[in-house]
Amino acid sequence: VKASRTVGADGRHLKLTLDDGGGVTFDAIGFRIGNLQAHLPARLDVMYMLEANEYNGRSSLQLNLKDVKAAGIAD
Image 1 (tube, rainbow, N blue to C red):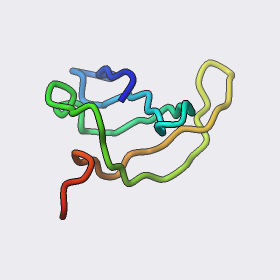
Image 2 (cartoon, rainbow, N blue to C red; image 1 turned 30 degrees about the vertical axis):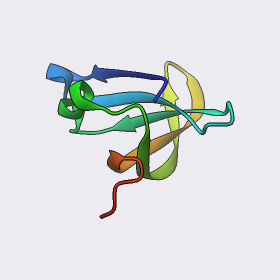
Image 3 (cartoon, helix red, strand yellow; image 1 turned 90 degrees about the vertical axis):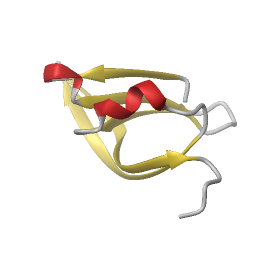
Image 4 (spheres, helix red, strand yellow; image 1 turned 120 degrees about the vertical axis):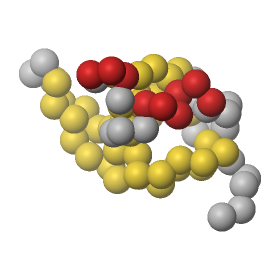
C-alpha cells in the first residue's frame, strides 16, 4: 500500500494506491470499507474487478476492491 485515504460521505469508501512490488502502481477503490483505513497493513492480498473510472472528464482504469486481507494470511 503506497497511499490510502477515505472518500465519500462520512469517509465510507477507501481509496488506495497499490504497488505490485515491481514499481507498477494501481488506483483502487473499496466501497463501504472506509473503516479499514485506520488498520491497513503495508502489504495486502486483494480481490478486485478491473473497471473504467470516469471522473471530471478523464477516463482511467482502477481496481474495484471486493475483498482485502493482510498478505500471506490463510483464509
